[in-house]
Amino acid sequence: MAELVPVQPFDIVIFGATGDLAQGKLLPALFHRWCDGQIPAESRIVAAARDAMSAEEFRALTAARVAPDGTVAERREAFAKFARLIDYVAVDVSDGGSGWGELEAALAGGESKIRLFYLALPPSLYGPVCGAIAKHGLRTASSRIVLEKPIGHDFHSAREINRRVGEVFPEDSIFRIDHYLGKETVQNLLILRFANFLFEPLWNANGIDHVQITVAETVGAGRRASYYDTAGALRDMVQNHLLQLMCLVAMEPPSSLDADPVRTEKLKVLRALKPVTQESVARSVVRGQYRGGVIEGEPVPGYSEELGAKSRTETFVALRAEIGNWRWAGVPFYLRTGKRMAERRSEIIVQFKQVPHDVVAADHGRPHPNRLVIRLQPDEGVKLMLMTKDPGPGGVRLRYVPLNLSFAETFTKDYPDAYERLLMAVVRGNLALFMRGDEVEAAWRWTDRVIAAWQDGQSELYPYAAGTDGPTQAALLLERDGREWF
Ligand code: NDP
Ligand code: BG6
Image (tube, rainbow, N blue to C red):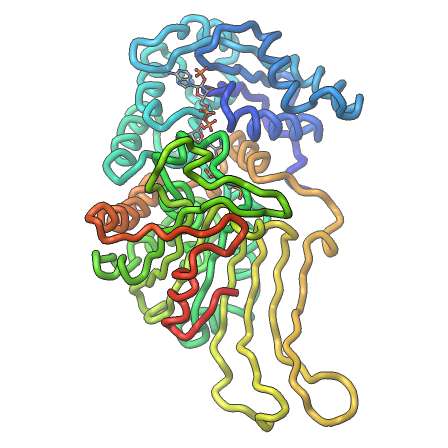
């Protein structure tokens, strides 16, 4: 597998190293890549956060998350070796903060290596931290910076972040992560579309009836409730993950899979999104918030109870978007995401048009339109629903069956998770899996209009019971168009 080729030695500074993202995703991802022999021994991980603690204490904190007591001894031993790469420095990255001299000392001697700064921090600190990196001379010629989503909380704050980061780092060293772009099936979508002849001639308003993109989660806001309450599902999921998926489905064929051809085509989709109005938002966007309910047999509290306060933040959004260009004229893209839903399921469904004429008698069954189902998680795979003849005697009877490509059954090898792949892509300098600044801003421009319509009091917040498919109004959104969610 190409991914197992070792990368060049690097130093990575993880700002926010004690936080949920660093502990839950980044350090485990680095550990897994190290276990697979991809990270050279000369590499270093410099963890940074405000808490004062020794490197030993930080390693113990991380071990408790990544290889806790009770995991197999082999993993604990491997972690003990990996942990030798890790140092810890207490740094306050806010303006005028302390600890930068110590960070400089920790990085000394690594000037010729690739240097990564990973900002696992609240986005309001992205500007100050870049200013401090420049002020303390920490940016080397081969430095790269990684920004987590959401980049800002609206168009203006995103533009300001892009401006401040851009004062220190050139665009080709800025890696804006949307971890959905690192998922195996999401990457495969481009190959499916552009390395097969089959789909492209039909991939437009002539062949496609509509597209559905669902990212349903069973988890609630949980430990991140205080952040989540300032964001909501639209900012947290739609502005980035769902719009990125939509771009990959809707974009024109790029000249290559290099970074700029792909990113330019995605940008064109975002810019072609039909602008929303207050009236269209009231009609085409459904907001919901979960109440208590039952998930997988367990009772779970409602959002307000989890948060400990009443809130009007949405934990569910369903919307109908349209792309105003020749290819997609009149084809709705239905996007839906929510927390505490009935099942964890992320899927892109492309519904083709009905055949123009029935060749079999109606009492032998009606043909269903072909449907391409791209399952991102769990059970990654691609399924093409086709009409066939039910086998056996008794004349022609139609049957709707899947042509099924299950990744687990077809590919026996394990592949790295999204963060593992993306971190290695940053070390390699491969920008194709990351968002360009103008893409992020274009996505915010559209999202801001929806938020503005909500703030003008045009939006209801519909309750839904945890463990369901969201508010019934989401079903009505499609029913009105004579369609249903799959
Ligand atoms: P947390 O609140 O869990 O962690 C924030 C980290 O930042 C802590 O280590 C905190 O440590 C540190 N920090 C805060 N203020 C400062 C400061 N002034 N100087 C230095 N360090 C500081 O947040 P998350 O880990 O959840 O999120 C981090 C970023 O990643 C956010 O932008 C978030 O939106 C994004 N993200 C997170 C995901 C997740 O699954 N958690 C998923 C996708 C994106 P201390 O307070 O000790 O300094
Ligand atoms: C993050 C969101 O970006 O994606 C979270 O901030 C969400 O709220 C998560 O839970 C979902 O990611 P995944 O990979 O578990 O689908």
